[in-house]
Image (cartoon, rainbow, N blue to C red; front, side):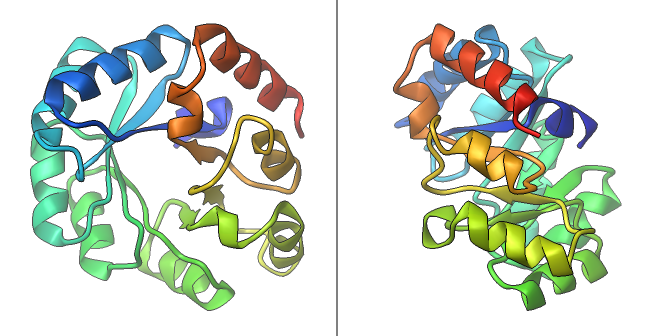
Length: 196
């Protein structure tokens, strides 16, 4: 979580297979990202997580779209050091913490945010971020400033600094990262470092 908070970007990988996911991960890490997740919607995602985690021990390689306890355990066994869900599932939070892994469940409302924290979540994934705005995040954080929030789903390279300025811990960014080159990712990291 410290690495994510320092970097302010969670690079999300969705690919058509393990090899493509590993290539995407190598590209993002090469561009300077130190926290990435491979979505379990990727065929062979666990193999990709295992390969990336073994090659990049100084980075946090996580699993995304983790929907249940079995998926959380399999991801952790493959080497994931971060578990991310689109939904709020208590067994996923409990399983991640049982094995000493950070967990960010999806939560869209103040009630869900509070529930996630009560269950021990390390942060909450505001999903989909495209259904909200940085202004909404700022308003909710005025009442719940203790909640670390990671907006994900529809966050662009242009909007990420606005989310950080509104109080987000970090932003989850997928296709917007992969659509641009290393230089764009490096520029984004520099902009986010100045956003707060």
